[in-house]
Length: 514
Ligand code: AHR
Image (tube, rainbow, N blue to C red):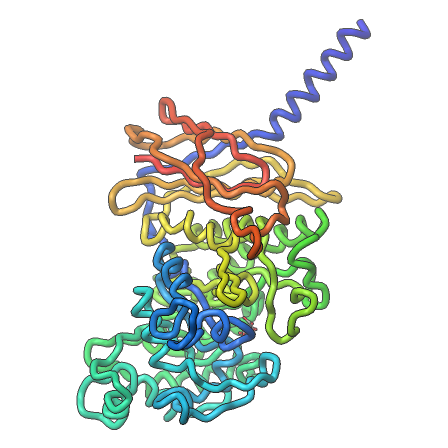
């Protein structure tokens, strides 16, 4: 009898554990409706710390290989991940930036103090031409943020004219004098940044009034049609969103921005980028999942005023924000980037996919040496961070049709709190290839997934890739740059319309079916 009870207990316990390590999903292959805009994979570069200077920009005379002054190793790596758009010059810096200081011969450009970021001298050597040449070199669309906080309507409208006007006009002539005959195409324009804070500390009503003036005088020249983006709310502030939707006539605005950073705990305790505890790890990822609630709340407000979803939600600053690396300038926001950041990026990109009917653009903050960076540089050395590899893995979803996915995930629990261990999303590209991405945030347990493909099931499993590492805080260093990379994934099989795969603990996996 005793033996029987014991073996029953063992059986129940093992069944429970086994069940805990299993997830099931259904992907509806024929029910895709909305496109995952490639612009969800945008990047952000601000005149902040070592992002532009010492990161991207080394100057034409540098011994570091460069294309028109921008590091060639970074340009090559950016082409690899098909960067769709690049936001510049800020951030908070944008509302203190006067673009005319950054054109013409570099030695004659005036200097300024970057009061937002470390009080360093900005010599304006990276300006409009340098930025737009960089975008051309990478093959990406520029996204320029204008100065509302300390600028004027005239200044911003002239910037649009300088860049995009073809014919005989004062600003077009000035551009030609500065060596650029043909105008550039620049569609995306942000009208100020965080105008509830560093962009002028305005009320929502004050900003909406400003927006209407600025937007009126930023003109379309020739075939260059502007996609104007209003400065949106901070994180959960749905009242700000409501005011934008009410006070800005909809014909004047294409997108409304949203900024939401992920912190380990709060702004007073942002946590460490490396060497964190499992509690810190859990808390950060749990806060990462909150992006879904935040985006959903803003979408609900937008739906009320714009049920046809004509205005896009533009999440043009997102990512993990930790305490700066010890020994670095606190105003430079330099932080390391671990496997945890890759997992966070996967979870958040899956959320953006699920809201792709409303989210049209997103920009991770920031591209080089600042916050959740894709690249870290030190003199002539450059490393790709774990987050870079997520953008490489997920590029297959760009402009693909999002496929509805139902997921039953085991929980990852810590101190009585629970979050889903698995996050997932799926899409079908223009060539009919299906990509399914899974993230397993459980730091200890591998999870077996059984994924039903509902619909036509002639697909074959073609390939898969995985990002994982020995520990959740493993990171790449200049001495050891390949600790976390993208590798081939073989632990998947497809039979009778069911995809079975074993997701390693703390990993991201994407499979391709054709
Ligand atoms: O990305 C760093 C800063 O965060 C940006 O300048 C600002 O817009 C935000 O507060």
